[in-house]
Image (tube, rainbow, N blue to C red):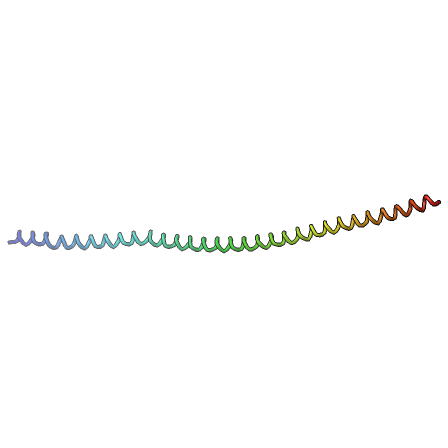
Length: 111
């Protein structure tokens, strides 16, 4: 009878203890799974933040680039109009010089 109690004890009590140990081990495993999950969530959040900052930086760059290009176009237009005005003034000056030169020749001929 003592042997049968020992067998039953070993069979049922030891198996229950082993089951509890297994559950404890599983709890440890879940902690092991939680850490990589936390790290992954942290990395995903960091990636989201960096992507947002990059997008904002790119938008700022585009805006400033467009502003500079617009100013460049305006300056080129002004430069071209000033070149045209200079050319007209040079032609006008040559025209008045040739008239003045003709009058000087006429005066020189009369003398």
